[in-house]
Length: 177
Ligand SMILES: [Zn+2]
Ligand SMILES: [Zn+2]
Image: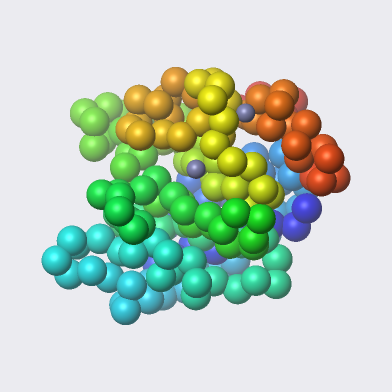
């Protein structure tokens, strides 16, 4: 599975490098693209957030693309989202904004990277056709808050893996993160 990571504006290089390495081992073929400018028209001045769907529709569709942005994003009817994806499509986006340990009075680089991987796996799971999973420890469990993100694993559960296997999407979850 070829996946392109697309930074939107300035994005933490350590997190991008970590995502590239981890996702390469998990899915096989991952490239890190050069950053593109943040689409100004996707900014909502009143909310002081970017509309994630607006950014999503501006991404390329040549290969599966995972956009990463540092700013806060929202989607329809939601105050904020950690990410958004096209179910069975090509495009996904994650925001690092609410994953930053500093936001919760924590200081932990590893936690920051782990959260980013969980959100990346979750949104890519949607791209590959997975819906939300009832298993609290599965990465496809819906995160209402950072607590949910921290409780769940970065991996797909057996049931979700089976769905992916039927679609011939191979996933290696053996790596130690
Ligand atoms: Zn989801
Ligand atoms: Zn699952």
